[in-house]
Length: 142
Image (cartoon, rainbow, N blue to C red; front, side):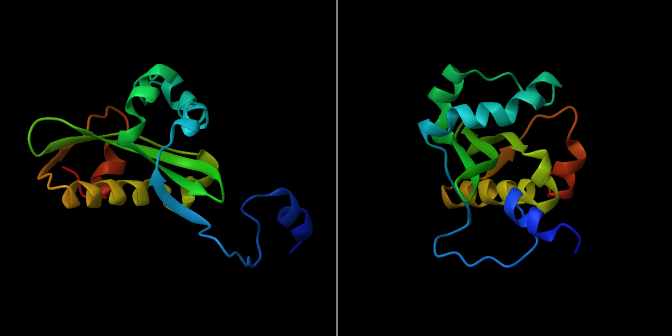
């Protein structure tokens, strides 16, 4: 492939084989030190009106309800499970780095949150969206 060495050196995606001793990709709980990176990821979608405005103070309060998709120490996506009344929760704040959207990270985050809801005994999930309904419909929501 033309330019393969440059792509390997200057791209976090690369084109070759990687040998790695630690988990390379994982979905994990958001930590307070992730807030700045998550806000940076959310900002373009907040500006477009796709996501609800969230501030650093908002995320400082809500970060335990968020999870992040961690790609070798860099956050590529996030989402939240906000509990409501008994047995009900909202899936919210789903965002993926546009350079990595083709890798199915959004679907992985939604599946993770649905599984987490089931494991914690929630029986009803909902979400509110005005622009991404098709994404959620393809992921089993009505």
